[in-house]
Image (cartoon, rainbow, N blue to C red):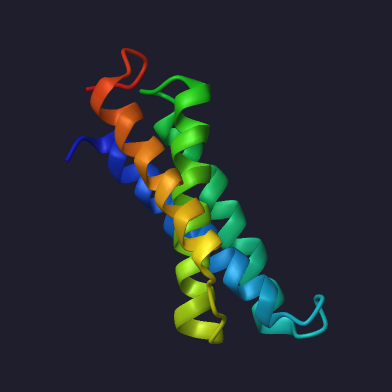
Length: 111
């Protein structure tokens, strides 16, 4: 796997950790989850900057934010017991389809 995709995945994982901790921080009233928000989102931005060395901004951000939405939604289901209705599942499927289309067909994506 090319390094820019590794950086992108690391960014998404760090983002998912940060946003999941945001939910657990209870509006920044709990210290450890609050610190995890800062570390997770800071790490996400750091890895995103590394991916930007190889990929254009628009594509990088589209992929990172799209994957982030899907991963955070899955974390909500698995960690916090949240439920997704049919509309949410279809919407997430469209996001995944968009990511696949960008990677498979776009001249702007780095191959």
